[in-house]
Image 1 (cartoon, helix red, strand yellow):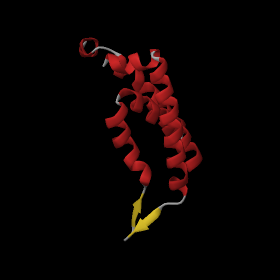
Image 2 (tube, helix red, strand yellow; image 1 turned 45 degrees about the horizontal axis):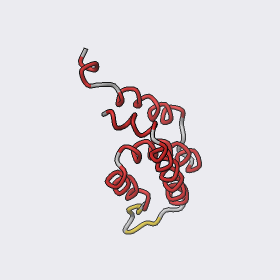
Image 3 (tube, helix red, strand yellow; image 1 turned 90 degrees about the vertical axis):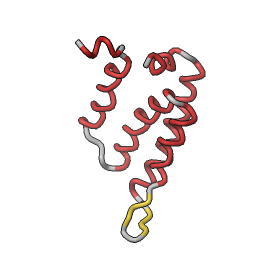
Image 4 (cartoon, helix red, strand yellow; image 1 turned 30 degrees about the vertical axis):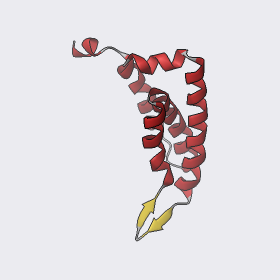
Length: 103
């Protein structure tokens, strides 16, 4: 799990985080407000972004999707403090070694 913290110290990793978070917000916000419906099922193109970016960029995508989801929720009308704290509270747990979680 050291890869999650390693991305934050790399200049290129920070650039990928910023670009991916910005792109995710650009895709997420319009389709949260105006979504397509096919046979009563909402079709949201932003659902493809976490899967494809996770495959392409790994830990950088994890950070950027967590960061990009907060403004996406805010501008989409479903923001709450609980949702933002959930994103930020999981970061220390994911960056700690597994042995320290067992105790």
